[in-house]
Length: 626
Image (cartoon, rainbow, N blue to C red; front, side, top):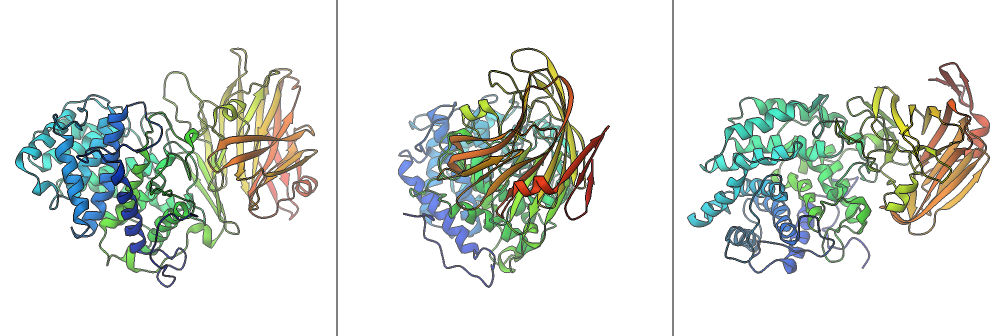
């Protein structure tokens, strides 16, 4: 059966000229996912044991995850329908609470212990119970309510990981407070105070200490504080006003992360949550703090959901597999179990808005990339966003997010270490491809082929269409470290990338462009100082040597290494036998669904380097000075 693997209502091109989707599509998508889980439920519905690779937490924890994350989706569906949803849905999750908190049921949930995965799942249950209180919590028997409270009480005085996990404790203990159970105000205040240390400005948090920037900022750091505020009944001590103001600022540029086809930029961990990228947009409308037009809110969210549905998510079983489109484990993390993708439930937060809310009734309006080319500087994470209207692609140029702790050794990660990400490509993440580290990377390569790594990133500037950073490359086979300073500038549809490289004598300097992936092998060609790869759909990645490179260029091919398809290829440039000392390398990076002519670009663009200044002259007469 070709995608989509579910029956959807007719499209409405009057109300939704860009996606055709309405609230009925969201309800149908929610219902299909919830119904598909039933065959995998334990007898008392306390766990959903889904097929797929287990997490490091074990089968019982994974089963709890299946309950908790799908309960979040069920809660939004039930509350959004004013309790008029399928009564069997209400009954299943109420029954699951009864069995999950009964130690003699054979399906009991693990106790909440310090830093346990159960803490993550408890937060989803707390939110679900709050939002469905008239239909589930208030109708539970006293003894069941007491058992639920006893289970949640494991949070009180407990220790969580020092990142977004602090907020799981906040919302769970606030639920205890809302039902008159014992809780610790110090835990709640401590968690909310701690996220103040991570607020960087302009609506951006880091997820814990360090430079940890990814979608967790939207679907965790902004989301839970405002969900907590909904639980307080207005008694939030003025915190909610601050959280709303921060989300407003964050959402001002957030639509720039989404391509014309609805795809979010493929960057960061936990990308298997997919629809959850829409969560902060819905939260802005729900908290009445969004700067976005109602039609833009729905266009972004519906476009993202439709993007995945049209590519087979959920699958023919109605399940959300571990991966991006189909199952692709290299894009996941060790903590990801078979039910982890159901944090996608956060993307259905909009169902809490009534059917007559403007986000459901006003006409869709275009995304920024659908209206004009976009160049957006985000100084806090150190990113440039680059959207081109003619092909709908958004690219993220990374000069700031590395996901490393402030102290201790840095560990390279393909979802954070690359110079560039996009809505049309994914990094090469399978182990062998990651060992080669070609795509989106500037490497010092040892004679045995081992590349250096881009470890801790030190941002230098990010303004207008230019961003810069430095990192230290450890030359393979020794302890010697070499600084690399990079400046990226956006010009038209291209990125011009300038590297000042310190390297040992004999090293090879290598740079790779975007990896493109497809069901069949991408076309590839290369010549003196340029290389190109192209998929059957016309997505083209190219690199062009403008200065400092030898004539050598090539293609790195991989199989089963990329979330976008089984065959992938990356264009690359090399400069072997470095003389030692300092060198400057200037590269044009292209990613487009339009025709790219790298030979012509190399012949028509000139680049000169004098002292500390790089001049790039384009055929239209403009000059870029870096």
